[in-house]
Length: 116
Image (cartoon, rainbow, N blue to C red):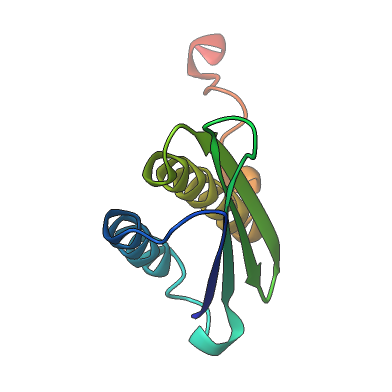
């Protein structure tokens, strides 16, 4: 996976780097089916100038589409955790849509009682 993380008005702390590294590992496990050179993750940390609020925005480019997630919180670690959680949920939903899980789901219950 190609990875690019930028910081704007935010200092890169060891705790934030560790949290991001752990979350990237979880994302990579979800994306095993894609070739690693075709997947690109761009992250952007930003601090609001007038409030003590940090924003984390993530863009994940896949061969089958592009996913975007963002979150705001009081510290960079929390915003990263929330953004990566949102991105993981979007990946799961995207892959289910590609597998066409909705077509395989049983739409009604069995009619055994009506026939008896």
